[in-house]
Image 1 (cartoon, rainbow, N blue to C red):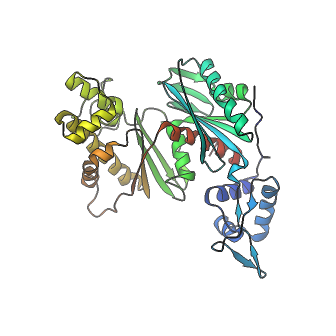
Image 2 (cartoon, rainbow, N blue to C red):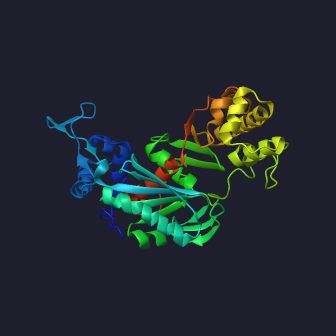
Image 3 (cartoon, helix red, strand yellow):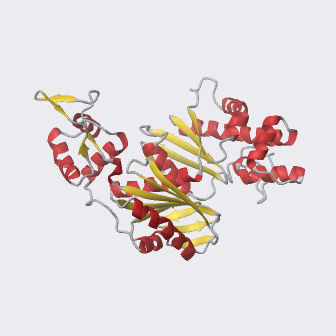
Length: 386
């Protein structure tokens, strides 16, 4: 079974700008939209009319905080209807596929996850199709699918290289679109998470915003002028050549003292196994460190110092208004927060502003939400380019 997308007519650049402003920051009065976009009242009326007629925007209930008086009559603010369209987001990992359904504003209304028993692209596409069938029945106004993968992605459609899946040049968007009948966008998972947090999360409304993720790998994203800075290095394994401590430990791949060798969950587990001969989970290592077990405490403390050093370097060079620390490895901060803070201060000028650091323990459904937000962007922006 294929699904027909619930979409809107293509938007002009002006309509697109209005739609994004209301989507991300609404509800907004007409005067506030005009001020934000430097539009005349007449131009705004011309741009909003087709958006209202198509159902993308509505006149919301009167809000006294937003109300404006024009010729003695109140004007209703403009907003979107979050439930007017739904979006699917998938995060494909080495072992499982995580899925979410979101509203037009990125709110998660359903979750799913399935084991991934093979990395054969055709079988993965079939699994994504199966995970689409249920939501297609429960949420008939599906408008698009976003897929996030660890690795390099070209043109938001082709997985150029994914070491986790052992893929090379897989036209994933085309394959999934043919199977599901929905428009599909594919992106590196970190890039997708950054987009989601910039539009609907910790970076909403910020001009300069950075995201650092720790987990199976190290991820980094930067937003400047409200837009994510795209790089050819996206998905290339950030942190492998970012040397934090040249005398630090080796990874199984031979890297010494890099962010990868000190901070990632596999490297931390590898260090403890090499030292003790016992395989332990990340959670077990953190628990032992909190209890004062010497070897676990030493490894966790070194990881915390590395994290603090990275945070300080990002603050020094990118000067973001906020740094979001996310990923499944963030619980490191709960155990070794003081060591992180000490390393941040040691690598900052004494008179520098405090680093605005926010932590968010992300599960893989959060990464899937990021992919769904990409689908939202493509629909509203009218293209796969942000």
